[in-house]
Length: 379
Image (cartoon, rainbow, N blue to C red; front, top):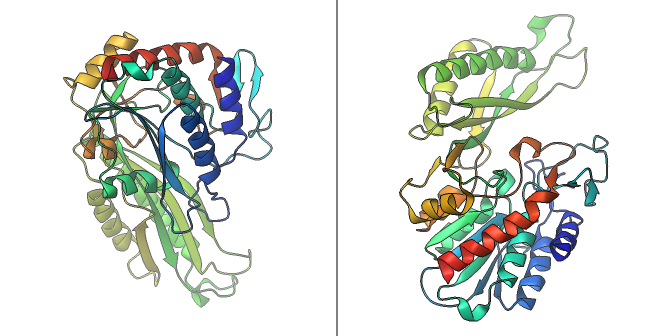
């Protein structure tokens, strides 16, 4: 456990924020290089696969054993941005207090890599009958470029996969789809003393936001899945930027939001309806309307309840497989032909916020669970 804690601390202290805003975005290569060194030392054959042309964003595939089938232990190396000044301790320093390990990425989800490596260390290489693959991706938090690159390369190939996202050590086989979008309104500036001198994009955004909220309510009334929490589609109005001075009519305003739909729905269909609603509401306003996805949508994810990996995960944890509302790389791993479950030690309730943490009493049970999964699926 002390070795795993030391590795978690080193991962946390290696920043790898990914963000839609370029000024906040960071490379993940330092984290990939760190993992590569550890896995090489443990006898894995390591490959670093650049995702960007400059190589600063990369995926990692580390394989022990040969042949078809096998198990992938998968995770993403990036974190979301952090709230400066709102943490009780340095977000880039793993800090233990009150039975918890605090730091950016402890729950979502850098710590999983350290626990997966420790589990792999406890399994003799000679006992592997099918390969064990540790996979690390980039940019999961803002577009899933790493997972998309692996699908394009048709790699890796395995029978099953466990993604170590925060699920409180309960297996997940189903989640919503998600897309992030930006609505931009462009009008005309002018002196604030006379509204007729311009066309206010900020006033237009107020009307457009009303349409978004109304559509969100309508979607919730029409679509429902009791397996999910919340059981309806959601739409989060994430950030808005517009204008530059109180005495000028706002010439441009942009709103970024995310949309999470249920299995059986398509984000693109919702955005078509939304565009039509906004165009109707702003007809005659003189505003130019631009609505576009910030990145390609992440599809809803579902692995059949009867899949062998689901039954194995249920047996190992003692919990029936569940559904969640947050998105993962699960649909991309399924697209590669792997039966996939999401199963990790963190808690989504503390992810993406100040004082993210991992309970220390989750560490050894996670290592033991992953060791048993490796022996069951690769041994």
